[in-house]
Image 1 (cartoon, rainbow, N blue to C red):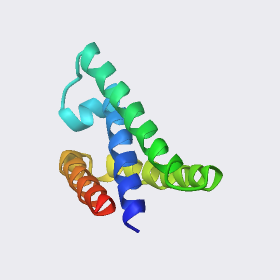
Image 2 (tube, rainbow, N blue to C red; image 1 turned 60 degrees about the horizontal axis):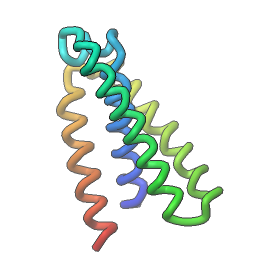
Image 3 (cartoon, one colour; image 1 turned 90 degrees about the horizontal axis):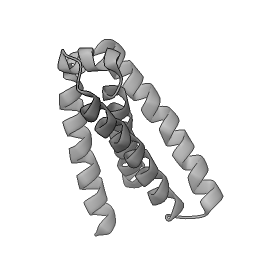
Image 4 (cartoon, one colour; image 1 turned 120 degrees about the horizontal axis):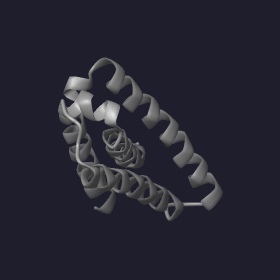
Length: 112
């Protein structure tokens, strides 16, 4: 379960970063449109986080099983982020901070 929370929180942060790179969601989250450089940074960060989650999964077990696991977590994470953006967009920053905390705690538990 801790492994799922780690992968899920990293994927959530990746999807939140990718959503923040879109102008429509920038207005929802930040109440303004970000600069071109900030948009590129958020987009790159989002893809990097999703790739990191895939790498963690790939090195945690049988490659075919863990990539399937990663795709399943991606699906669940995309649904969560989509619902958050639809219904509670004003609290996205708090949810992202909670995801950072969950990811750090679960990562530390796995390392111990």
